[in-house]
Length: 320
Image 1: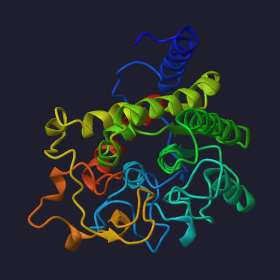
Image 2: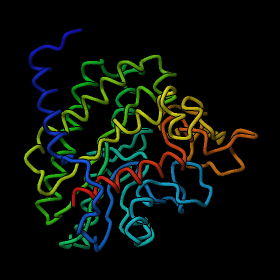
Image 3: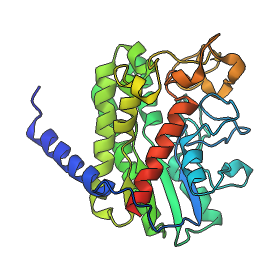
Image 4: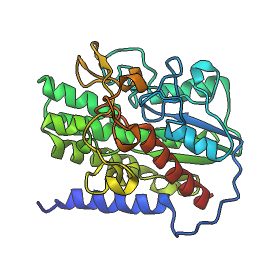
């Protein structure tokens, strides 16, 4: 279907924003920036262990989160804020509400995570700040649609607003003294095992793009301080059955974990796999974890996290 003019204008603007914020060139020169700290805000994708050190992946003792991989590239190790560190991202967190992706209250929203940091600390001149979001809002909104609590149009409007809210948080970070902000939107939830299982893969692909578009356009003028790393682009490649083998992955559709959560879990329903509970003893018998893209129906395996963390580091090092 041909895009309407308003939608086409938005896409053009978002594409321009992505290009400007991502920087240009293919240089492999390592940047001059030597970060003083890595500080992260976001959802399960960036959670470095808020709940007893466990992450939303296979908890196998390896470097199993992209934030850790990026930080290690600069010689840092990341500690969650719950243990006194600078990793504030929290699993299932939404952008602006503390009712998380599973419908439970009390999870610090990404906005509240920033509040928590600024209440006790300030950004230094050479701090690198990572922020991501969108996945949890889309999961929560899709659940509301499936429950008959809102229409698809309402879901789209709410997701777009969440994207704009994330852009507002990016502006807040820069306004609070963050000179180097790395921004990620959501990856394509239509290509996740959850997205495929819903039978609404096309809708979820579209709404993932709409979130990212809404987030990117308002921050297009912030290229001096903001780097957009396109998680949707990179992880689409890793999670596509046709391209996954090129990344050393052979199964991009089956969650490798078998750790069932009989509570609300990750927001996809009761009695579903929750990778927060996953370790090498709770994976598919005989499976090689390194060959799988997904740990559960939404979250990635350590192999994918390491690939993306290296990709993000390269983008950051080239830019700054």
